[in-house]
Image 1 (cartoon, rainbow, N blue to C red):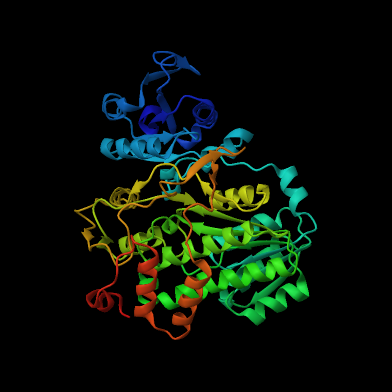
Image 2 (spheres, rainbow, N blue to C red):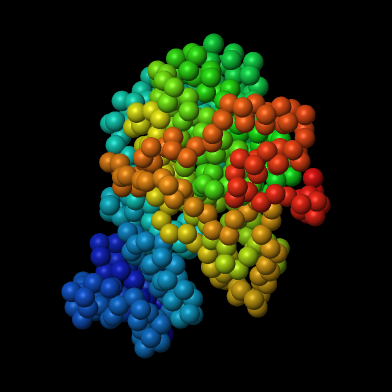
Length: 487
C-alpha cells in the first residue's frame, strides 16, 4: 500500500503563524500520518499563494466544497485569534462537510511556539466563545498583591476557586478561603497548598450572613483585599426562596462591607451579574440591591475602595448549562432548553477571574465595572454544537425539547441600564459605568430594612411583593408559579 493511501488528507483552516506551525510539524513528523493538501484563509493577499509550498485553496466559506474537491479527511482549525462567531461558523462548516476536525491549543502555546501534533485536540465548548487572549500585567499584579492578606468569599465556587488560584500566583502574604461548603473549600485549600506551598492559607467555614463569624475573621486576620464572590445564583431556586436571596446576597454583602470598612481593608471587589440589570426575578433583584448598597456606601465616603464587577454567565461553571447539557447527552437526551430564542452572555472561568482581578485592583472606589462579554449566544445553537461535538446529531440521536422560561428568567440578558453610559479602561475588555449612583434604588435603607425583616420571618410572598414594588420589570409570581418552582 502506497504512502498516500496511509496518509490522512488534511486541510488547515488559517494560514497564519499557527497554521504554518501545524503544517511544518506535520511535515517534520510524517509518522503521524497527516498530509496537508492546503490552507483556507480569509486574507485576500494569501489566496492563490503557496505557504511552505502548500497552496491556499480558498477562503473559509469554501470549506465544504474544498473538502469534497480534495478528498479531505481531517481538518485542523488554526485561528487562535478568531472571535467566537468565527469559530462557531468554522465548526458548523466542518460538521456540514462531514470531516473530522480538531483545533490548535490555546493562544499562549502559539505565541511561545510550543504547538505539536500531539497537542491538537477536540473542539471544546469554550472554543465556541473565541480564543482566550486576556493577559495581565504581572508586575503590577505582583505589586498589588505581594505580601497582602487576601480574603475570597465563595472560595469553593467556580469563580471563587479560580480567583484563589490566580491570586496565589502573585505571592500574597495570606490567602483566606471562605465559604459555607466544607468539601469545596477543603478542595481548593488542598490545591493551593500543593501548588503554592509557601503561601500561608486559611480555610474558613463561615457564611457571609453570619455577622459574628465575619466580624471575627476581620478582627483576627485583618484582610486587606477582599474579593466577594459568594452569592446565591440559581434564578429559579431564588424564585422559590427569595428570603434566602435577601439573607445571603443583600444582608451578607452588607455585613461584609461593614466589616471591611470598619477594619480598614484597602479594597473590596464584589462580583455582580447581568441579571442585576432590569431584574425580573429575586436573584437579579437581590444583586441589584447589593450593587446599590455598595455604591451608596462608597458615595458616603470611606477609606476602603469599594467596587463591583458585573458580567454574564461563566461557561462550564457548576450549575451552568454546559455541564447540564453534557449530562443529558450522556444519558441519551433529551436536552432541555427553556425557549428556542433564549440567549445568554458567556465567558470562560479563567478569563472572567483574570478580568475581575484587572478591574478590581485598578479601581479607585465607587465604580461598577462591566466586562465585555462579546456577543450573546443562542442557547439552542450551543446545545446543537455540544451534541455534534459528542459525535451525535441533534433531533436524530438526541432530542431537543423546549420547556418554557421559568419564573424570574429573561429571554435576553443585558449588561447595563439604558440610562447608564460606559467608558473604556486601559483594558479593552473592561468598561466602567459613568455615574454609577444614577438610577440606583431610592429609599435604600428603608427598603433593605423592610426586606430583611420579611426575610427573617420567611415571608416569601411578601418578599416578592416588596421586590416587585422596587423593580417594576420584575414579574410577580403567581400561585401557579409557586407550584412549578416547588416552594
